[in-house]
Each structure stands twice: as structure tokens, then as C-alpha cells.
Length: 219
Image 1 (cartoon, rainbow, N blue to C red):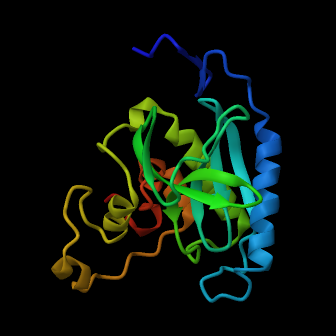
Image 2: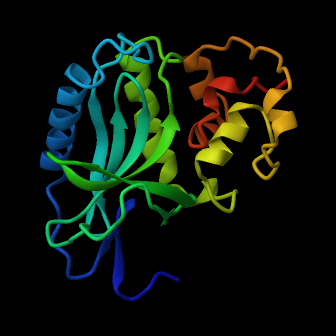
């Protein structure tokens, strides 16, 4: 049962008494900050996919702040932003926090940009070479937000960067990543189009774990 001080608005949880944040404005601010980063600090680095731009997708109220997906040429992250009345200045940069959504708990890392302030992020894809263009990346981000908030997707105890790495390497979510497994040669993944993967059952659930583009289709 949800706590009395929380209420559910559609697919989002908002703390009682909190002002409804302007997540459209927050998304535009995120895009502005990371477009500047893409054009300066990250410009010309080999890990960038030049076919991908910067987009803030699906931002909506969550708790007192905003939640959405940030797409950049180098990564795709879930992004959690504070509300206007929240002070995250005491959160240590690179510290970890677990946020719980209808689909389960996810481990986030605290980040900071001077023009944006503190934020929390959970890595979904990095780098972005699996995506052919912006359309594929944005459709994937939209699917992430849809499936993140579905209770029927709750399966694993917690999702973090190590679990995502394991699933990209075709390991089970609870199998430890050892020196032996990290160096074992793996068969190349089968080539399946993004459209095919988004259409088949469970694919969007796999997507939330950073494994969508590495999984073979069911027989």
C-alpha cells in the first residue's frame, strides 16, 4: 500500500503538498546544458555517435521533482531532478541512491553541472553506437519511460550499472562479474533490427536493463 503522504497521478508519484513542477521547462534546461557540453567538452571525442543529438524525453513530475530520459551522442540516462523547494547541495557527487519505481528499484548516481545543479542519473546505454539515428534513440527513450512505470515489469531486486553490464555480456542478473567471465570470449550478438525488438514481447522490459540490443529473439 502506498504511504499516506504520497498520491499517484496517472503513472507518476507526487508527494502530497508539493507544487507540481514545470517539467517542460526543466527538460528544456537539461537540453540546453547538455547541448553546450556536446559542443564544447565532448566535441570530437571518438565515443560520440554523430547521428545522435541531445534530447530530454518524457520528463514528468516524480516525487517533488522531475524524471525523464536524457539522450546525448555518448549516453542515454534516466535523469532525476530536484523540485524547486528541494536542496540537494549536501548530496556528495558520485554518491549512489536507490530510487523505487513501479517496475522496481534502480540505483542512481549523483551528478553535478554548474548550469544545472545536482541531479541523479541511471545509465541505460553508453556509448550510443547501437542507434542508427535520433528516431531510434527517441523511440527507445519513450519506451523506457513507459515500461519504467509499469508494475508488471518488476522482476529484479535492483538495477545498477553492474547489473546492466552483466546483461550486456549475456550473464544472468545475479551472476558475479569475475576476471574469468570478463575475459571470456563471447559470440557476436545476432543482428536484429530495433523495430523487431520493440515489437516482440518482453523486449521493452529488457531495454530497461540495458540489454535490448544484445538479446537474441525468442525461438
